[in-house]
Length: 261
Ligand code: GLP
Image 1 (cartoon, rainbow, N blue to C red):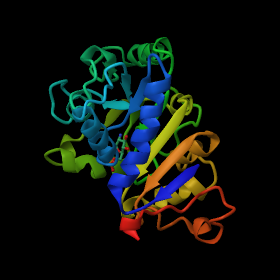
Image 2: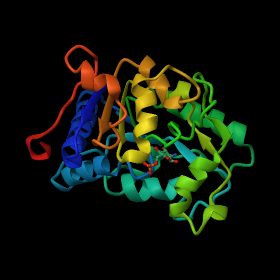
Image 3: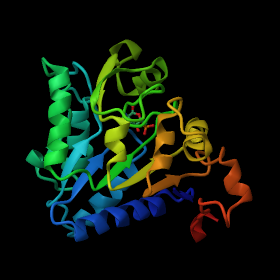
């Protein structure tokens, strides 16, 4: 993993945007994996700024990581709407090239199988953008998820529902289940860029980067992927103890811009 640590969020977002631009330039039909949540918003802001300056992203297809089960498709917190609002419109992607798992499907297993098929038919995900949950989840792969899992319906843990309650009118409004790409699905992406901010993510980030590969921290499976960029602020990086000692030889690099010191 390449870990970049800085409180200059905009500069970190530029690193992500450059990786995405590189995929778009070298791939005739680029496929991006896109995440919801607050963590990747600086990346979308940077891309949207570039699109505003004339940068063209409309050749890209995008697949969302997950969706709540049963949430109305027009609910502002459905990931269908979040992805439309935060990604598809600002980045100028074609509406019919942006896919979100169907959390309203009568047959959820079939919807998950169809989603995997759509990813395969699009040629696979070239670059996956990720956030991380405070319990170490990626997508909605909660602790105890199989590291080989595929897109499926899962139950959300209380910690995740509590974390996401801020987007709803209270905890009881947060759906109990969701569809999520599996960890095995995520690991098939060509490249992965994960962004995390804040002290609430420090423990999960430390387990992801330096902990044992374990279903207790689903994000630790990313250690198995050869092309992962992790973009952290100082608070989210606070638990990375090896980084402090082995900066030169450990495969994690410390990075800061002049403006963040
Ligand atoms: C959500 C999403 C994840 C996201 C995570 C962190 O539940 N399913 O994809 O990475 O939780 O969210 P945030 O970035 O808002 O902290």
